[in-house]
Length: 219
Image (cartoon, rainbow, N blue to C red; front, side, top):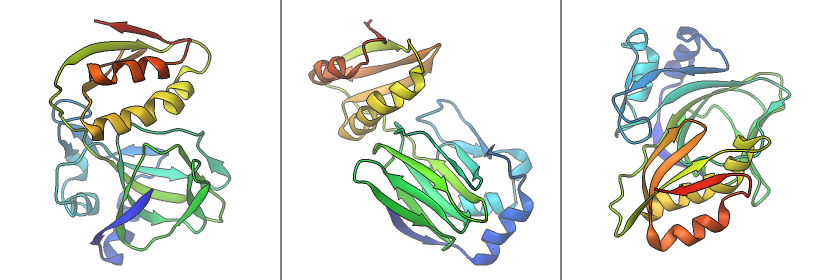
């Protein structure tokens, strides 16, 4: 679920980012050049020439949204998956864990000054059990602009009780896989839902996954 990408940083640089950054629950460090999911994000003016800027530049490819995420002790996230994979750099924390809920495996995340890539299409959560907050630099991996053989445009309207939870537990794992498999493209968030192109060979599979309370429209 999570593995090192063999890019290491100095401990001094890691320590510096803690002192330079305003650590709230989710501090966004950059902004999109155009499309949220597909186009590169650029560092915000206030973070230029700081430790944040230096650290993000150690990733040798275009990146998506980058955030410093703080998870205080006794906190966790609800079960979910994400359409886009993530890069993680552990900045602080003594008992922070990433939990693979499909294989029921826990990953102890420590400050080892190394970038990791996470398969976010697996249902997971994160938890902080220790004395100190779990603080991470988390970067979205850009989605792939796939070329579909026979594209069909669909819109999904999220309805019912707790729609985001149901979306993240049914459609997000499939969307993550389909992005990598080359069967969706042009994903975007719209009012109360999402819109994307799907290859017609995958349309039936998608229709079988959509929760009953959601509304799927073929455009």
